Image (cartoon, rainbow, N blue to C red):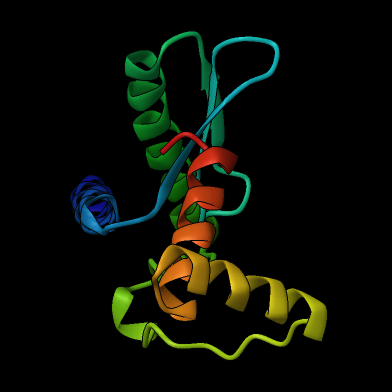
Length: 133
């Protein structure tokens, strides 16, 4: 009977891991200054790995995520859910110095775009250069 119980517990753990592994966690890949790549799962603190190639990193990141989740389940820790896009409206207020506001407005006018379009473009280009996705 004890063996049957441990088999059942093992099946439950696998189902839980499969559930968490299927969730859309945000995986971040960055080029390492020393060469190769570093990858981590944003919502799973400490879930990080590195490799020489992106292909190798993706495999290792999947393994790191599985190990992180297994350890959390074994320890009975709360596993965070992925951030969903439903939590974000696409709007936020931004306070900035008047001089920067003026500079942005003048640049937008010179480009023939709205201030909002220019700000979105600048933010997006900044995000792209800060990390390899």
